[in-house]
Length: 196
Ligand code: GDP
Image (cartoon, rainbow, N blue to C red; front, top):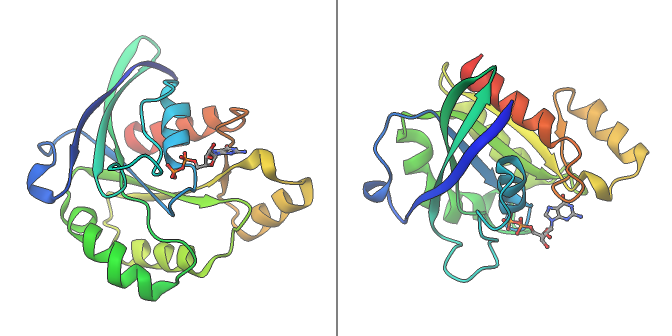
């Protein structure tokens, strides 16, 4: 699978501003600083396409990107959706209060979402807030939707830490956006889920 093209479509601050339904969507969800923009840039092979959550003004918006993939000479279109990162150490309380309030509309009502990519910092694989997010997604996921848990910053891990993640999350996909390790595997997994 090759990326033929990827480009920014638009930003939305609420449901009414989102792009029309239709194209299959991959929604990226994760804590602020988890490496969400980095992995979108790595997957699309375009530095600077997605802006870091530390970029002013980018935090609270839903950003839409289009990606065009090539497999065996055939083109496949999908939309990558960069959802606002949710808060740091606070647990499910903050999830409910903030992130859930801002995002449930999109997550629950958006018909086009086919894949939820839940990004988890591989250095902190067992945070309560990530467990809460996973539980939440599992409860609302439709039969035509899939949750992929992708662990970021793989380059920061020792072999023993990698083993621990694989033991606890047998389906774990581990990626380093810096070294590009695992990026192709993640793209394959997303493609397979979207276009089987
Ligand atoms: P976002 O807030 O989730 O969009 O996160 P960013 O993509 O902006 O990344 C947050 C920080 O983590 C930045 O300082 C990145 O350089 C760093 N980072 C992101 N991905 C990786 C990775 O794969 N490896 C390492 N070592 N650092 C990363």
